[in-house]
Image 1 (cartoon, helix red, strand yellow):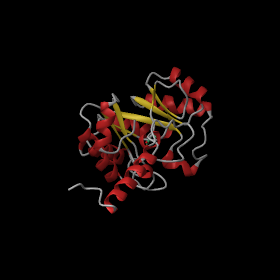
Image 2 (cartoon, helix red, strand yellow):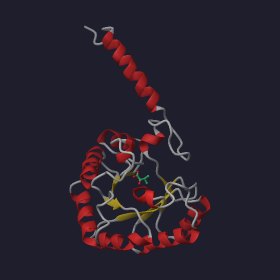
Image 3 (cartoon, rainbow, N blue to C red):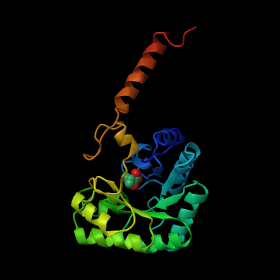
Image 4 (tube, protein in one colour):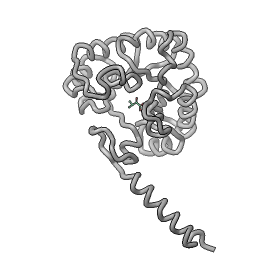
Length: 235
Ligand code: KIV
């Protein structure tokens, strides 16, 4: 599950969730940006450290934001090291298949475990088919193998056609973690605020397990009304 702060990290751990992804989705769901592109490495370190303070046992993955690993292997290693050292992440994640293989290899070579991420790549969605279902079988299989061969310990498959996600899961030795990619992946991840129902219009594959949006508005309306009518606080 994704998490962005200490409070929800604690809740996720109490629910038995053992891997927390501090995704750069923090940019859209928490910080109010309309994409993940403006999220900085300092933003990610800030939120990763908050999750680390709230979680006692979970494996915490710090997402590498746009601009923190694209320029060179050494930049990628430096950014990943900051997520580990300052953000107290257990591992890092970065977007890209075959084209990101060198970066993955460099970071793993520096002793930092890396999760890959293929299929829909939100940081560069503007360049290609956006957030549409990925169906290019050969390319997706090549990407998954490239990420595995570069040393990644797992790979996220985002909005990959379910039959191709199943094929990738069978073809690679590392665990596949699906989001919008059907039931055959080894694990699943969702954006926390989407599954809690904080947004009215989540992606179609999201199952909303709660309606926090409505409940929050209801609670706040009650508070405002109680204060205005002097029902709260009691003497
Ligand atoms: O940023 C994020 O939350 C992610 C998940 C959607 C996999 O990358």
